[in-house]
Structure formats: C-alpha cells, structure tokens
Image (cartoon, rainbow over all chains, first blue to last red; front, side, top):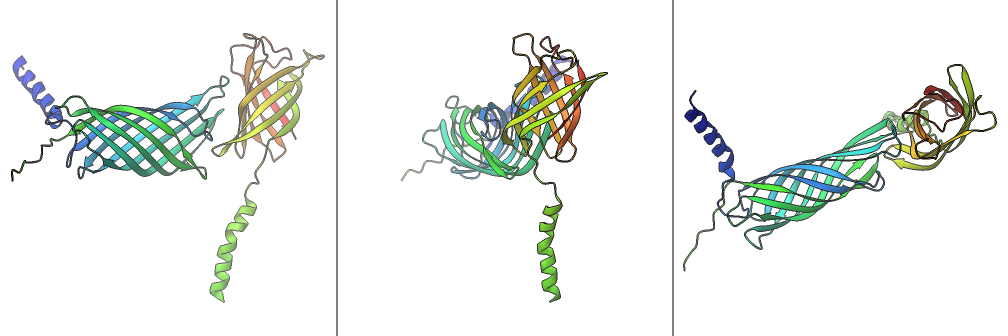
Length: 197
Length: 147
C-alpha cells in the first residue's frame, strides 16, 4: 500500500471524527448534542469518612430546546485513608444519572446552567479488610457554566458545583463537589434567520 | 374470617423474623483473653471505645495491653484510632505497638465472633518489624478474648 492512500484514509478518518464538532458558531443550542469529561474534587459525607477525594465523570446529552437538555452521566469517586498499614478505610461512590439541565444564554460563548439528576448509586465501603456495598437511588443537584474557547469553537471549559448523593445503608449521603472538564458540542447550530420587517 | 387470619399471619411474619435475627452486638468495653505464637502464650486485654457508624460497619478506637514470658515485669501497649471494623460476625483491628518513631510495629488482628461474648482469630505483623515489642508476639499467632 502506497503512502498516499494511507494518508487519505487517515485524513478521512480524522474528518469523520472531527466533522461533527467542526466549528459553526460558539455556544450550544436546540438540537445540538454534547459530550464531555470532567474531574471533580469531592468532599465525602462526614458520615462516610468526611475526607476529600477525586471523582471522574463522563457525560453525553441532547439539547431538546435552547432551554432544556437531557443528559446522561456516569461518575465514580473514591477516597481512602490509611491510619495504619493494613487498616485502610475507603469509600467508593458510583452513580449513573439522568440529568435535566436548564441552560441560559447570556452570551453566545458563555452558557450557564443548573441541573437536577436522578438515577442509581452504588456505595461501597471498606475498613480494615471488611467491606460492604449498597445500591439504591442516586440524585444530584448542581449548577455551573460552559465557557467556549473562542467565537467559533465547539469546545468549552465546563465548571460545575454540585451535590451528588445517594441512599445507602438506610441513610442518605451527600457529597459536595467542585469540578471542571472539557465539553464538546456535536452538531452545528446556525443563527436564527433574520426577518426584516 | 379465613382472610382475616391470613392477613394477621402475614402481618406477624416480619415480627417473628426480626426475633430470630441476630441482635445487634456492641463491642464497646474491655475484653480479656490470651495470645499464642508457636509454643509461647501471654495475656491480652483489648478495649474498644469511641463507637461510630461507617455505613453498615461499626468503627471503634482500640487499646491493647499484652504480657508474655519475655516481659514478666512489663507489658506491650498498642493503640489505634478508628482502626477497628466490625460487622455482625467479623472483627478486624490494627494496632501500633510502641510510640518511638522507627521502633513501632503494626499488627493486624482478624477475628470472628463466637456467640456474643467471645472473639477468636489470628494476628500478623504488617510492618517490617517491631523493635518496640518486648513480649514475644512474633510475626503471627492466634488470639482469643472474652467479655
């Protein structure tokens, strides 16, 4: 196989991947899709260690209107302390949520939002070699903003303050978290047609 | 009448089930017993305090005092803050013996409840060594304590 066909295939592949997020205008609007990944620092509920740990999230959703968006999110956070060797205490929280996101559009390249999510939460605890886990209802409330990189970018920094939580072991636990990540608009949105009358 | 009887039976079943379940055991307090390692044995006193819930596990602070043939006039003492984990049957705890930096040793004790008043198990050294240990615990052995 010569170099030229290979290069063409590679370029075509890149275009196939990049095309859906190719810049149209900054911001995100009705019928746009969105995917993203973010990392948060999370203060775990005082009843469950009360320590600060990390949490990763993957998100994907669709903007049904300029205002409303459905979003799926899976997230996993963990914190561990080791007071003595062999006596580790840890807590792992995994959530699969469906978020209803309400978006605002004060500027084309800044899109703040608030969200409310519900789904399932798996809480796993370990202490000194003993462990236990429980899977029950998970939920989340939060808010943040997307800051698009430039006026024609489909990529934005997404910053979010949220309180994910879950029921487990006959209690409800809440974990304050502050996160940031990248979000990508999928699809184009075009300015509304101008009517001159 | 038949339906009423059935309703009563169904309503009473959960109560009967609760009566047959394990009553909640609280480890809080001092337990006395012995440890053995190979051919040697000594006495053991374990105090569990500072009970707190951690999910459906229970955490305690632990203080351990032990004697042995190599320390007839003295004793080894160990402590651990929130290093005891307990569920319905299993008790795991870690203690650090010795306070001087570099001389302390950490032991992990794994045990199981035998009824509500006895715990039996094994222990092992999880740090590299224990220069502060004087009573001959060694690196592993067995233990039992009673309330």
